[in-house]
Length: 334
Image 1 (tube, helix red, strand yellow):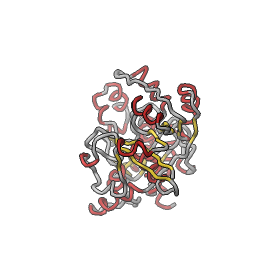
Image 2 (cartoon, helix red, strand yellow; image 1 turned 180 degrees about the vertical axis):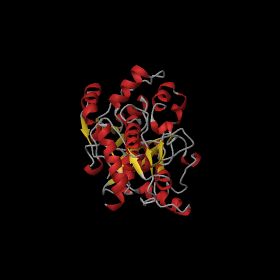
Image 3 (cartoon, rainbow, N blue to C red; image 1 turned 90 degrees about the vertical axis):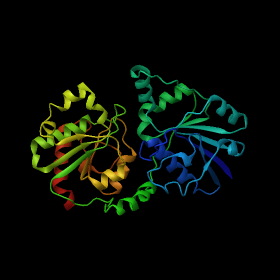
Image 4 (cartoon, rainbow, N blue to C red; image 1 turned 90 degrees about the horizontal axis):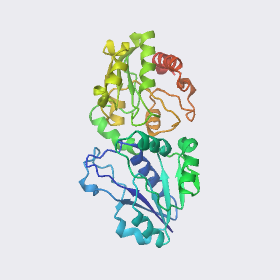
């Protein structure tokens, strides 16, 4: 039996599984590994006690068992560090006990390091622990493989991108109680277009999707009910951003709104007819899986998603607008 530890931890009491991809990846990895024979998997909580978290789904962790580090550290054969950064003392204690340590990078660490080192006011210390190997996701291999291999001087492996409908299915009963259906339903002729990009990093921002919506609106305004840009409310006080959007017809006609972050399945079921996405060397993410799993049309520029009907060229606004108009008029007939 191989005893595997996976790190978890949050100091945010207002916890939501939809807040970031780190959290989802942790649980998807846990759910995958625990079903493999001869693997004994511990999900180790380094943050607030689970009972202190305000969960948006009360029974979300019913099938998941958490452990304290001190209770399992002597049993571990492998520890996978993901989502949080462990201290030198913790890593060295485990190494002295013969535990193999894996650093699982689920973000574009090359890009995040550039942004943090050169552009952030609050630089974070880079902790260089003594890992045995490092894992990266396929969408980050191009930028991160050589970067991590050189910095840590350790072998780097590209591992599969994993996703599960576990959390979607957990949320479905709550939506049903509100009379909502998570699966795509043809609701109306005028469409609500939703942009989910996180706007936390330059490789996933809302600017291209906004311009795609603008160009499509200028071509055929009768197709649009509303454009909702999530994760953008904070930019309502950003003069550069305001000067950008105030010049657009979708803003002049009050078609577009800029909102906070909200729970993905709720926004899909309550408002969404079509999703526009854009990425820059980040060809896979959980939003894509959540949207496509529930049969929503998604205008995208990802080379790793085999849905060419909705795919536009990387930064090709014109191509994206044509795909958006096409999907608005034909998706219900496909």
